[in-house]
Length: 161
Image (tube, rainbow, N blue to C red; front, side):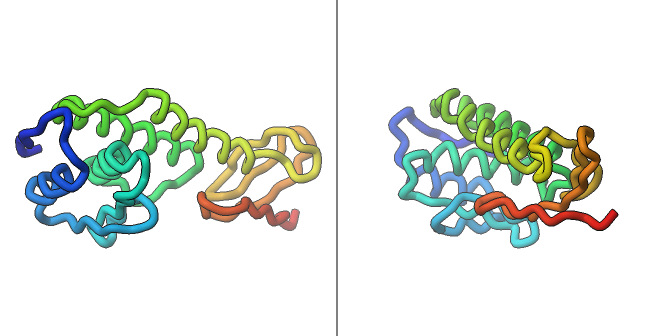
């Protein structure tokens, strides 16, 4: 990563300018949400978020890890952890502090999302993801498929046995 000269009081806009210089092939797009799009080589950021800086660094973490998509719910969690580790490393180089509590809350939100997806619609026991978005209950042997959306309600559709 190119050296970015910063101070602890670095403003978001200054950080964004420095990151644009450091990563000239990446598009930085103001948005209502933060995300990395490998296919568009774009980082979407929400400058008005209370956590704009850590979220931006996290998305750069995804970019540096070359994250494209996830194969399973646990691989998504792994990629989130990996991106946060990159964000922590970047923040240290930039003398920026990221709250451990914030990182833990973000990771916990994914853990809760995964847990909710894994609950059997028939007996409410935790199940196992057997393939992409497909779960099977080890208690009652029911199977279902979930949607891929992370930001909305989880839909479960029973699978024909």
